[in-house]
Image (cartoon, rainbow, N blue to C red; front, side):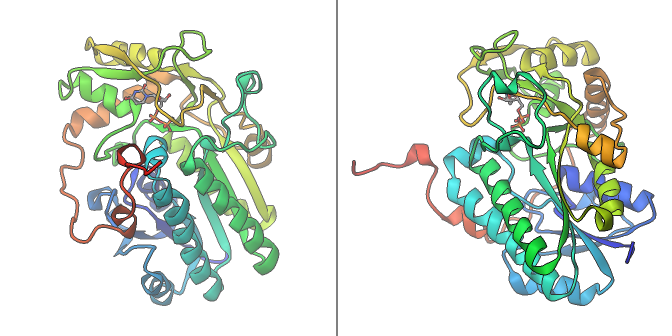
Length: 357
Ligand code: UDP
């Protein structure tokens, strides 16, 4: 380590805050940069410095590095992250996710900070079902399933050039389905779109039912298969990757448990964990969803000795349930409001547009 201070963009969000907590526990100094547009101030560890700011604002990004000259590594979580929304608002994803990352990288390079961990995604791999039958390795063909996945691929390509031109050292961590909670922080999106928190909201009586997006996929029960990986295991992978960055140079790793569960199996497991009936209805497929996404994390296991600790779905859902029961209204905060980020002022969602033909 050249420095013990880590800048965590999006450190008020779900995975960013969990990582910030584990960084603090491991003795690192943490600076969180977040616009609180999706994140929660209460999710940020008390020991971390907090800077309210937007990555679209180049001056604000640069000032963070001026103010905290001992930042030695950046973990970049801040991003628009919804597959379904990205099919409706492609510019928000393709442009803003990339431009915000470039603003950050430019400020880093200008300040001589050359160590970077990217929060990337399994949505890079929308493979035909015969290819997705095996767990997906890092050398599988890149085939983003949505503008969200594509935006992360754009950033990975930018990292490749920053590595070649400036010697940036980076690791891109392609998460499969982040899930579960730490006692200090859990999953609270507004609106919530993710399966496990939605199912738990049904268990809490906050929603009447959960909709299963499609039951005609080529899978064992017709519903999508995903690899659910505990947020603490993801956070640990970031810390391991950071410690090894100087030896690694440039790497992409897939992060998952290597076991897939269908949407119906998630609902059934949540029924068992919560004891609630959790009604489910079948709805249409969600655009942008690949049928099967299961990771091979062989590379990071072999090279860094990463070992996920939360292997079974039941214990992952149980940790999420404990957090949701303790925080039935999530963080209970209201978002800052005010001026919407630039992307929200662009085109209306694709499905609401009237074209001239
Ligand atoms: N899903 C669902 N109903 C919902 C939300 C999600 O059936 O209300 C499905 C979704 O189609 C996907 C899986 O659950 O196959 C996980 O979706 P989520 O949005 O949690 O994560 P993603 O796979 O988009 O990262």
